[in-house]
Image (cartoon, rainbow, N blue to C red; front, side):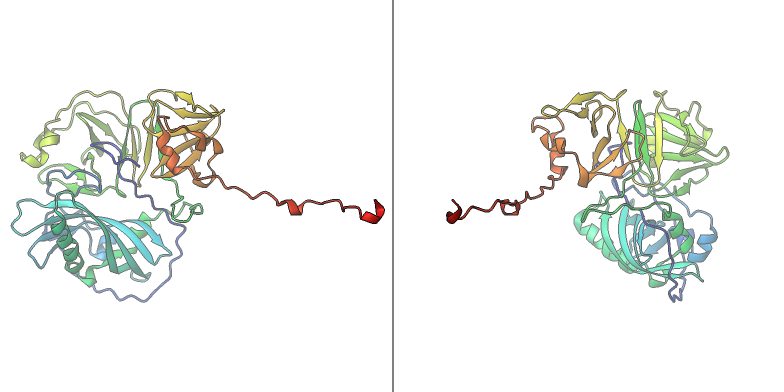
Length: 418
């Protein structure tokens, strides 16, 4: 999967789980003081986004889940005097309700630093569930990956060590309802090939200009001081919510789009609310304010996904070209994606992150196809514009031919009968 450039595709972190069967385990949580209401934080960058200017965030109102686990974000001071703000982890996988994988946006300001480093952590934790307390304990966690593009390696190592020690054991809990909300219970995961994830991501396609907005879980909205706008913390798009009108605004390059439903139809924003002109007059909002009121952009479709997804962007109807040396393998030349088709009406094949998925058409449904790729894919010439896909086409299974001794043989006549 290609990393998304500015306002393009985001990093894939596909993780689906089967239906939930909770196992009650004894857990006596000791709630620590949540410092979210005492601290301000900066806008965390998405896992692959280039770091943007810091933006002050305030804690969201307490919810029922917040009353259970103390709420998010949480602010701490590390042993070195650094300011650490940890946002609500976005759960991507919960294997057997025992091992959890999650991503957390983090703001880290070393002591004496003028502005914070923004990034994400991927964590894995052994969990214990208390159904009665509606809590999930993740005290036994480990950091699998840290993504802070502005920090040198030595500081990154210090950060990961301090995150581990700064979060006290009594704060290592999350409301069970938050976890359940993040787990997709409706998906049935197809059987994986060993070492290869088989669950297909959401795959969108468009023959007209379109963009894909990836959000790391449900949007986390952070208020802006003295303003009725909120911005989405867990995406690297400039995505806002105008509270009085419950309208969403999205900056696409230098043009604004708006919608009343994140996953609904988007249109040209026209006149922006006066709130955009009242954004803080500092460098943090320079890029956004430079595009207010913005230019009139071309009609653009917007696909929004709260899980890692992919977009096949075609320049018009599919332009099929026959792959030389084959009879019916076609490739689609008017897209940057690796897309093939077995005849103009056969299944479509799409390669992403080293995995093949197939579908009856561009609109899905998509299924894992790597183990069952048609033989013509191995005949793609090395000089073909898409020959790079050859590395991801598995070798065909060759079945041994029966040995000759298995064949019946007529007995040879003896010498006496000759």
